[in-house]
Image 1 (tube, rainbow, N blue to C red):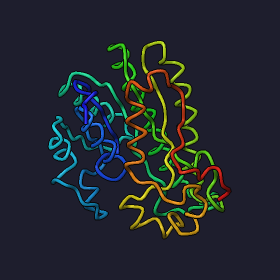
Image 2: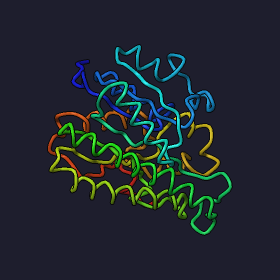
Image 3: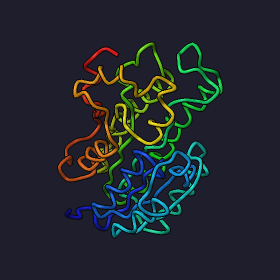
Image 4: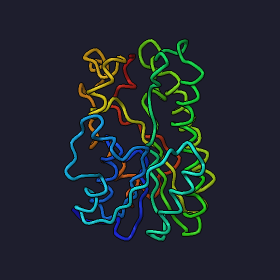
Length: 269
């Protein structure tokens, strides 16, 4: 594989496992130095996801790129400020930001709209929307000073089409807000050479989903029948689209939300 991102630095939030890990490793394969940001760097072990090295940072380094791990709660401005401060101190720049950190459910809240507790609402809005906005605001002046940059926010199929019975409604609402913020930020930052897009994943076969989400009605055989391509996504499917969005082939693409759901949004849930 060629390494078109050599000399560039990427931050990937929520990168210690799952789709975020796939994003981090793909960027490393493309040559970027990668900052792995997560609330818990041992997140993969917690859900039984097997790594090829002790940590995602070690996996990145095994691919020939430099890596930095920064642990913190990105709902908090001080954690975001520290993430970007440590990134610039280590690598001198920020070329790519992938806002992948998020969560779909809250442990003490029902999955349906009428069952969402106030604590669940606050958590889902903060972890999915607030963290994204804070990171974008931190990245924008750095990228503007460089004259270029790429921001890829992570949305969701649930922001484009409701799940059956309205499941994960607040998560979908937060991701809908991410979509709107993405488009508006793209309009603001385009003249500064910064492109802003979003990926909206469908149901993706991560270790976490296979272990936990069937309890919440996600990843079931019934849902498979609603996907036009008749398979669930893999983290690599998402990384393929990320590779397009951070590369030269998408140099004239900004303000877009790309659905990567196998056609699930074409079929009523």
